[in-house]
Image (cartoon, rainbow, N blue to C red; front, side, top):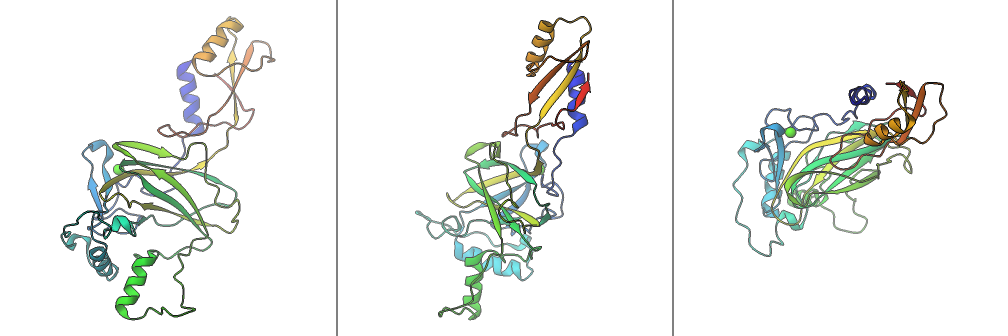
Length: 302
Ligand SMILES: [Ca+2]
């Protein structure tokens, strides 16, 4: 019976990751389908655990001024491999990237569908980082640093093009919806999600058609590691119905078998020789696989 149930779980499918290269293992020098690393605050490396493959490492304990100078060069096409060595930072480190912009890192935009809900999970090692889902009505540009407002302000100041007078052109980040997930806070790898709170980008902003993930490690100054960023479509809890052949089992026997599988009997008004067992599928929680779901009242004979 246990094997049959496993088969059932497989047949309804695990949640497919909608984010290409969410596991960060694909790419050449920088992970594919994400912005480029800069080799200074963001790095793409093999993890100590070979099972993880490649992961992202961030360092926010760098001088903001040095980061801005280097980012300007990356924006102009410099290679992350040519990044400078970081200058020493001193307490209280209020001049580091940790205290200002953070080490922002964006996924490429992916199309989404109106009315759908989404789960975001990711693995983090290190202090807490803020993770954002950003929603856009139009496919956003992915120019390096375009959305880093302070950095853009700095570039305009350097170029003498910043108008600080009244009515100056505002720097617009361009997203129309955002959702937040706090992750991290452990020296071990852990998986994080928003427990029982899927993201609903089009609920109040029906124009949203694209989403990007923004990883944003900032304070405290230090190193942060990220792997397995997973965005899946959320299926609301549905009732699963398993129909078990009676086959000489008593109702009590079936009930105890069901209880062992977490499938309490709620109804027993079945055709002769069958016992229906129902359960509500729990939403995804951190560290679990995506929930398996069946359409309501679907019957499967084990
Ligand atoms: Ca990986």
